Image 1 (cartoon, rainbow, N blue to C red):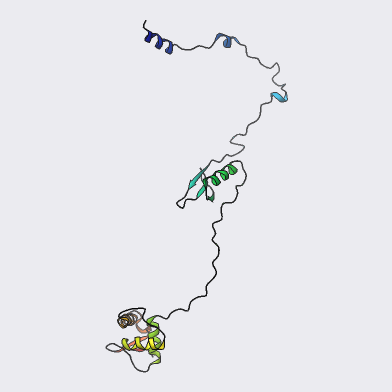
Image 2 (image 1 turned 45 degrees about the vertical axis):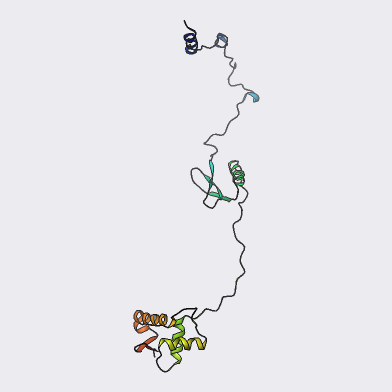
Length: 192
C-alpha cells in the first residue's frame, strides 16, 4: 500500500466508542420518588409560560432609529443614535419599559400679529366704482385706486390689462351675481 492510500484508509475508518465508556454502568437512584433539593432540576420557562418577543432596530429615512417587534406591533422610538436604540431594545427584552425617546417637539414660536390683508386689484376696483357715479375704463380705475391708496401695482407693466381681464372673467363666471356691469366698450360700472 502506498502512503496516500494508507492515509485515506485511516480517514475513512469508522471510529468506535472506547471500551471503557461502553462498559461503564449507568447509576440510577434506588427510589425515583425520593429526591433531594439539590437533585431537583430547575424548571426553565417555556414559550407557553412566557411569551418572547423578538425586536429589531430599524432606521427610517430621516436617520432616526426605531424598535419594532418582528411579528408586528407597537413601535418604540424614535431614537437619535443606534446606541440609545440598542439600550432600549435590551430594556424591552428584559421586560422593563425603555427610557423615553428624544422629544421631537419644536419650541413654540411667538405669535406674530397678523398683517393687514392687502386688497386685491379687483376688490379695489369694485370699491372705486361703487363710489363713482359714472362708468370708468381700466386705466382710470388703476389711477384712482393708486390715488385713494387702495391698491398699487407691484411693479407690473400693464396693470390695466390685468384688471380688465379679471373684470371680464368675473362677469362671465358669476353672471348676474357679478359686482360689475359692462356699459360700453372698455367701460365698467358698479352693479346697482
